[in-house]
Amino acid sequence: MPKPQPNHVSIMAPAVWRRFLLSFSCGALVFSVIIAVIYHQDVLHQRGMLEQKAQHVVALQQELLLFEFRGVQSDLLYLANQEKLTRFLSGDQSARSELERDYASFALNKGVYAQVRCLDTMGQESVRVNYRDGDAIVVPQDELQTKTTRYYYQRGLSLEEGEVFVSPFDLNVEHGQIQRPINPVIRFLTPVFDDSGEKRGLLVLNFLGAPLLAKLKQVSAGFSGETMLVNPAGEYLQTADPRHEWGWLLGHRHSFRVDFPVAWEQGKRLDAGQLRARKDLFTFQCVSPGHRPSAEPIRSSTKAIADHDLNSLILVSHVSSSVATAHSRQLLSQLLFMYVGVMAVVALLALYWARSSEIRRYHEQRIVESESRLRKLSSLLLSSQEAERRNLSRDLHDELGQQMTAISLDLQSLEKQEGGTRSNPLLRRAIEETEQLLKSLHEIATRVRPSVLDDLGLRDAVESFLSEYQDRKEMDVRSRLHFHRERIPSKIGENAFRILQEALANVVSHAQVGQVDVDIETDSEMLYMTVKDSGVGFELEEQKDSTRLGILGMRERVELLNGQFDLQSKPGEGTQIHVAIPLCEEGQSK
Image 1 (spheres, rainbow, N blue to C red):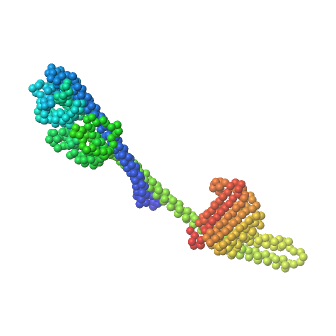
Image 2: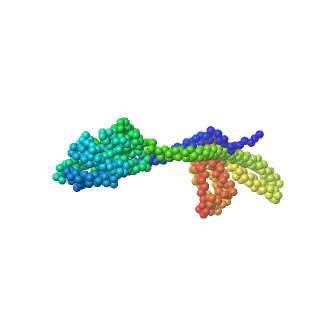
């Protein structure tokens, strides 16, 4: 038959799994909160970084546009004030060829002007130079066109000297048709005058839009979002998909206002600002020719303008929610991967802890049960000892004592019968030794168990014992006995008496002092006993390693009665034993 394994706790035990689930759930909750906090902090950090980057990119693009526009306006006003142009407008036809050469050289050197033109007051081109593919070509007079119907010509006629009109950003038109391949341009116009100061026409620079758009795209390179350039009507001038650009001119419906209606409605009247629409981040910046950029960074704003100028441009950056959270999602994936690994370790540790805890609890329970059995055995042993002492005391007193009394009486009768003046010395010695033996039997019976403890109770037994102790040991005993409860349960009385006996025996054996204080007091619920001497004392730590059983026996008796045992001692300061025992009935004691 196999031996039982009391130390074995199955890993499948319900108690183990309850502890495992509790600890694993706590660990999972803690690490889940940590991951959630890290993820949330990263989302906020990435959001802030993207907002700053979007502001920075749009600000750089704004600076680029304004720089280019100022350069074009400077070139336009420089050409408008040429002496050759004034002579030509005043009727000097010989200046035409000089102008054509200057304009061709200018267009070739600059490389950013598709056309340099001079229009008369009737809208007829008088001088024109085309620039294409790195070559500047002077257009013959018979191929010059009339621009009377073009909006920029009509708008330019109202300009005063030194004023510049900038057309909307659109596609170049030749002979009423959009030029193919498409050629985005912005037209800069200023009036020109003859030597008498009379307005004679307009000087027009067709600024190439393709290089400008390429520079804008280059500035935004590396930006995780998308940058766009739109006009005041919400039409794309530049976007990530070129097929969506110039929709109002090329006949398709793609536009910013159609693709992002919510963002357009909120942002179209903002001079500058950031907003969120359907979790996407949009940054707006309106740029008008001649506008000076603010030194302050773009901030969310509710400042509204009546309407954008027709020639203004709107820079837009768009960061979709998927792009904005891409880094955080990647981080979350890494965290979840780590979380799985950590939770696997936590599961193993939790299972180990659960089983170890259950094993420890099992052993603690066994120890408690063993201590309970040991205390019960000790209690039975002490009870048996007291019963044996009671029987032994009764036998010594009743049987041996009576027999010795009978022998003593017989010897005394024999001595009387012999009479005479001379007594038998042997008989006299036998009588004396018999009386001494009878006295010794009485003393032994009293020490084994004083009959007064059974007959009169604890108080009288203590008084009798202290009186005898003081006489026999020549010890000054100062006692204070206050019994407010007459009836003391016999078991408690027996053990309290034995504790007092052992404590006073220790004083005689070890204290090296001639005086001891004994205080015993009872109330309705407790018995208090204090035995104090001013002797040599000892170190408590040394007592723990001592093999003497006196103090251990006293402590064991007190604990068996659910009481409290307190020992205080220091070398040279004496020893004090304090005992507190509850006065419960024997049937109620634990």
